[in-house]
Length: 419
Length: 114
Ligand SMILES: Cc1cc2nc3c(=O)[nH]c(=O)nc-3n(C[C@H](O)[C@H](O)[C@H](O)COP(=O)(O)OP(=O)(O)OC[C@H]3O[C@@H](n4cnc5c(N)ncnc54)[C@H](O)[C@@H]3O)c2cc1C
Ligand code: SF4
Image (tube, rainbow over all chains, first blue to last red; front, top):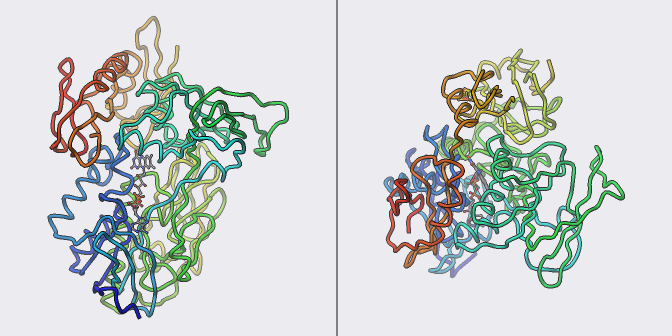
């Protein structure tokens, strides 16, 4: 079929060498599988090498590390175990011939390859939303970056993208970039947030106070003007339905606009082979092995759902590897009556979507609205957990025991309500 | 004067209130452990931060290494440290965890290799 492309053979091919992929490859190797890890970058670690701030690993390594340090710990383990990996290797296509026959086509500096494999763990991360996706119009100018692009320029290449900066989005990424710009001597003129509350973790919101950076809540950037380079941006206030309020506009002079408007799981290659996508997470619908509806295709990390903690990303990678082992040993994940997890009140998204009841699981979920004195409830199994504060920015991780899941019938509803 | 923070020492994120009168801490409310209390008091009296940045490097795979201070430094000293870091230039090879410079007794540690 591909006569001139060399053939390789594996139990598992892991696509994407960020923390999810590295943790998956490590676990797969520990479980005795023949594994290949592929990444298109020249280095392993995904986005971690450019996330130079501390805040990684408190759960996974029980100490606080920077992004590059977290990545290098995983890389060390990977090398110790002799996991086979290829960098500068971009996966072009996945084909699913049968349950235990899949092909991953990739290019690398030594040419194109086709890797035949029984299972695939897909950990290609997420992509950033661009300015045009959030309705910013205006001149075609330089000086507009996504947060990740600005971060790569500053923290990998040592280039300051601009001097007078407006940041769109007060999520962790936007706030962390505000600090980096301020530390490097740029003036952060404003952080503009559409919602009426800041998007990031408390410790990152503190950055604004540290550097006296104004935060405009319930505002949006609507237009960018300049000749060749950004010169000014137009900001408007929005009402409670997020509609622009006429007459509320004002301009901020700036040479740089940094857009941190969220991430979207990169799942194009999965969609092409018929993987079902959950519109609320943007990632695949999965069971408690993190297996998609296409047997033997597993997914973890930001390709599954957008995570704020790398610790959970690594945990998902390990879980997917364990799923892959079970799949290969038994020639498939046994079909059974799955318990469907439903989103109840104030739950915006959750994963996994189907539970077997034969193992303990973690449910990852986000609320739709911030709430104080909340309670997380699963009425079908009588579970109630008090939560002093919940915020959309902070993913919740709920542990469920197999016995609890067995108590549910066909569905299990997770809701977060005020008490 | 009452300062309100979300404790950032551990992921529990307790809401802490510190009551200060005439520069003196009167009461700390809301923390559920001594580490949080200690942090909150320091935050109003002598706030400190671990500083992270990148430093130029010659001859490595990437043109910079990321660095951090080995310990938190007083907040008001940060601009001075940053201008020092902007001036220095290192030579590869650099190992992760290596002390690459020292500024006023504060060790600057590489968090990425080069
Ligand atoms: C700015 C920022 C700050 C953050 N701060 C924190 C923090 O303080 N603490 C914390 O715990 N977490 C933090 N996170 C979250 C954490 O870093 C991410 O959740 C985590 O890195 C996601 O890991 P991943 O492996 O799913 O994806 P990624 O790290 O994105 O890795 C995906 C990899 O897949 C590769 N890839 C994609 N497509 C292909 C292809 N076709 N072929 C080959 N390779 C491919 C990419 O090159 C990339 O290396 C932060 C995230 C960001 C963006
Ligand atoms: S007060 Fe203690 S328990 Fe609460 S967040 Fe701070 S360190 Fe954690």
